[in-house]
Length: 319
Ligand SMILES: [Zn+2]
Image (cartoon, rainbow, N blue to C red; front, side, top):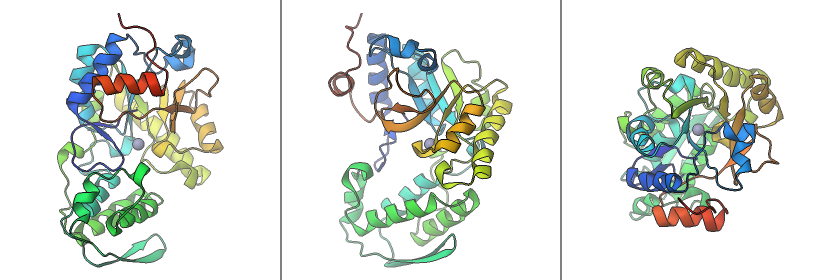
């Protein structure tokens, strides 16, 4: 599982792999002839090669998937799946989690207090921002470290609150936080999602498959059944219209699902759906809830060791 092929100094969720490291990693998959299309896992082919098969996926359809990743996957002939969020395509703004990172973790200094209306609640935050905390946040890995400073605690609290809001409220609150932090409302275009035209322009590309990642990237288990249907069926329909072809794969936003969300996905007739559970997929697993391994910045040697030693993949000798 990848998200972005880009370099960012602050990347708390490990979403970025640099173009150089991504090229190294694709070279490894090519050397071991390990890469298969994701639907190989629904046909059983992906499991049958005893650890040799790896499908490359990208969540969220960031523009760099097409500008930075595509030339590399073409060079090494690696099939990929890009999971797109239909109503974020072409938006001239960052995803809310990237805007939040820019506001809270990248701003030079933060004011001492923040009052924010989050849904029905008015929340007050007090921040004791020390001069060294910004630098500390640049190397923060949120999943591993947990929040260490007021800045990082604020980031986690806001993230956990914003994820539950509807998309219009997410935009409004994010803008309010950017203004409060003294950051510009407009983030770098390199962090934007691709446009519909950019995506549909690659429909039919022999290596590039498009999958659905819902309509607006809400946390599905926190929604009503009607809202889940809107997100899952709506996003699927939008995307089929955009690319003019059937969509046969799906990825759950934030990797989160429950039984009703999975039933809705199943009703779409997709062949395979991915979570973010951290594991290699095996043949006994549900093809509508396949786990994935998140690839992070690693060079050729480290990437090979990670797959072989930690996950018992790539066990065949490269040819
Ligand atoms: Zn996503």
